[in-house]
Structures are given as structure tokens and as C-alpha cells.
Length: 175
Ligand SMILES: [Zn+2]
Ligand SMILES: [Zn+2]
Image 1: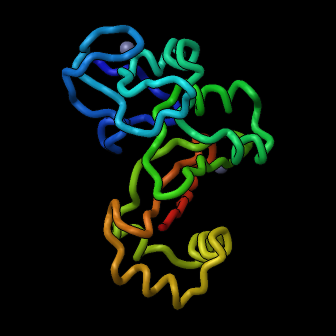
Image 2 (image 1 turned 135 degrees about the vertical axis):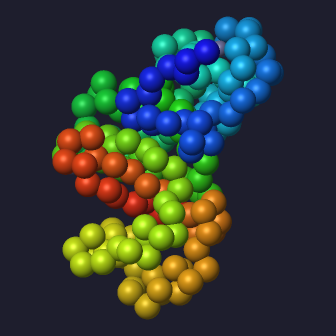
């Protein structure tokens, strides 16, 4: 079975947002082999959703559910259709406190999961400066973080890619 395509989350199996499971989806009532493992924001009691019910928006309609916070994207001035697609029709990601979906070139970025240690160590020049200033980090603190960084650890660093210029952006969250 082929998973639905998510413009802003191209490989949800690789990021762990979609996992193999034979549990039944709360929306379509079917066990289709895959379920979403990330956050679901809804007033209703909804535990399991399949990626198909996320992709076609049926779960968002049925449960008034969203999977990511729209506040950062709204604040970035993105188009309403883009915000709706990211928050209501795209698997979100697990974050320590609050996920922030990054944007670039007037569009939401693709989410690519946790950053690799090697790519973070390789950050330098302008890319590094931009990252440090976005997260208000001092260079020496960043060095300490790098020494102990683990994928999925605390702090977490997430990788995003701009769909237009290809720039890589990193989001960060910690407990
Ligand atoms: Zn479903
Ligand atoms: Zn860009």
C-alpha cells in the first residue's frame, strides 16, 4: 500500500511520524497498516488516525483536529491554504514543548525529522550565524550542546528544507 503524499512532510515513515500498526483508525474505522504517531490537537477523544484520513482532511473535519500549531505560520504571514494544509492535512512532529513549523520564501518548509549530528557539526559561516541568532544561542553554548547532541534527545534539533530555494533550516526545542 502506498502512503499518501504530504507536500510538507515528504517522508513521514523516516521521521517516525507514521508507523506500521494494525490498530484501527478512529476516523475511517479501518486498519490499513499505518498510523500517525504524533500530536493530535482536538477537543474530542481521538487516539489513532491513519495517514489517509490526515491527508484528505477527513480526520480534521470529523474531529476538528489539527496536528501542528498554526500560530508560528500565521505570525509569518503565510497564506491560509498553506497553514490549513500544514496544520490540518499534514502529520505533525513530536516536540518537547511546542512544535514550531518553520517557513522560508513565503511558504512553509518541508519537515525532515531530527537533524544528524554530523550535519550540525558541519554548520559554519552564515548558516551557523543564522541558526545561532534564530535561537538566541551563544557560540560556546552551542559547542557544549554539540558535544552531547543525540538524535531525538534533549535539546532536539529538527531539520526543515525550503521548497523553493532549497535552504536547510533547523528548529530547536528542549525541556
Ligand atoms: Zn483512517
Ligand atoms: Zn527559501
